Image 1 (spheres, rainbow, N blue to C red):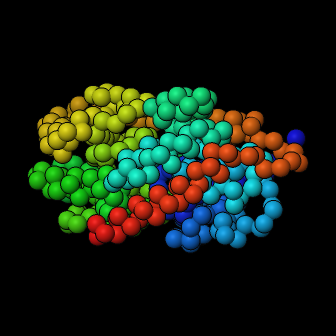
Image 2: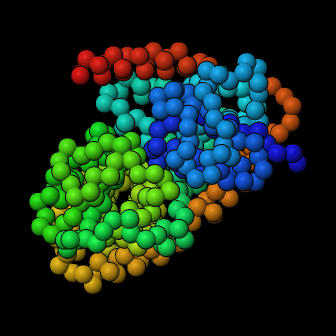
Image 3: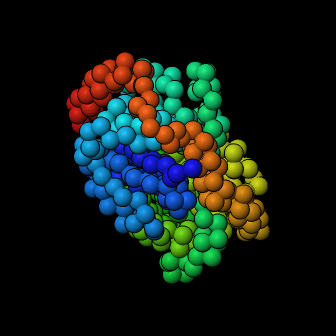
Length: 368
């Protein structure tokens, strides 16, 4: 069977966990000999993938530059806004990979209908966690579960990228300081109240926390993040909204553990009290502080969590995840001449989605 021509449509060149996961899958498909191209809907962060090892295997372009009438075998996206832009990227088959709940990321409900209706479109559907599959199944879809992964060998062998810790514990906080649902600044404020904690922060968007920390790293090159995790004892992640937080798994693989605010599907790889500690969303900072103090007082327990966490990471190697995704995607790929797949839901609700986005942006601007 001839190689497939595959287009990965990303909203922008933003280093989110979902985008990095999609790029990992794209590299795997390119390594199998398929023609894979990354297309960006918006030119907000350029088109350079130089931060990604092996990026030369993935040519890039903007959606606005896509040649009229050029059809690929399959196009896939991971963001609902980009799915409504699919008509500008003709494909014989379309696919969607859900990496999280879309509606909670918006401060008001003006976009709910456009998001809900999209779940009815006959894409090839993938989801990173079981809870994300439920709404799709309710619409008669048959989503495929493909969890995130980690380069276990590379993270386990990574040398610490920071000097020896000068405190009792070195704690990592990861995520955009400007994203309210990540609770980065509140987490750091809590950690600063714990004596003996050395705080590290990194964020793919280059943001810095509002409060001082011991190591404010900003955007760490993708190939170097393993050394940061290897230098930390544990990660504290108190996001209000997660689906499969890749940084937790990466900390596991590098030999650390985590304190995590409970999220739907956390049981997929987090065993409370076995490989990490879960705290409830209500009063998460207070509960995480108590959990951290407990671990500082019980180094033997902390060591046990770290060992179990690294064992867990070995069950989520990227190789298996990428192979599963590639098998399912290629099985749905036509690889034959023919017209683009009709998208009746996208066509019917595209104007509604665009108007909703404009209204949401207007409201956000008024809020300042």
